[in-house]
Length: 231
Figure 1: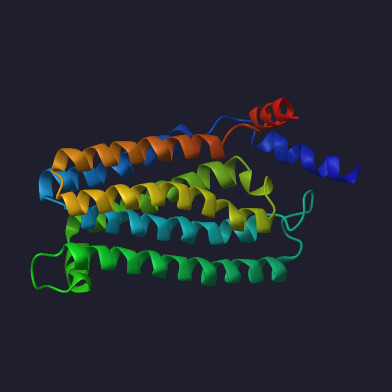
Figure 2: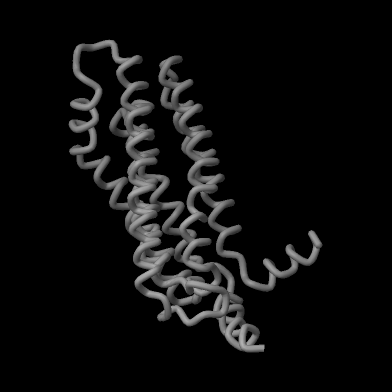
């Protein structure tokens, strides 16, 4: 009975539809790389590097989500803070190692495809210091920040998952999306694909992002209906 009484506000808090502002911010942030490809000649390596930074941004916002989430279903979010801080720290280290591995793969791909003498890491540093690349990273920071505030804080979604569930939730989305992007980008790198092919990759990434976003932020009634249909 106590669990039900604590669960009801959680369900009600996330009963509203996902924030339209967050959806618009997601689309706008994902269109900046298209500007980079069309207006500033981004190559596949640059595009994949920007998407790597987005993965880092997703991990960054997951840390406060873990801390805000309840430790157990129905528990008050303020309880078990030391344990949740440990979970958040563990996630930061584990996710950081994952991101380092991802960056090594990107560096190897860039090195294998490089026709010049510039080291891959030096080229990456030169690219990311460019204004358009920084604008793209800032766009992802703002987009995911809007989603965090509008969906997690204002809609109360931080109560829906436990801290450990929230820790694990990003990996499925990141792995599925970025394995597809990485393989597609690697193919474009070695085929030296034109800008039109990169725009197709960007469009596919936007579609994947929107699908994952809307699914992740569904109203609670839709989640309950889907669960009932499976049972």
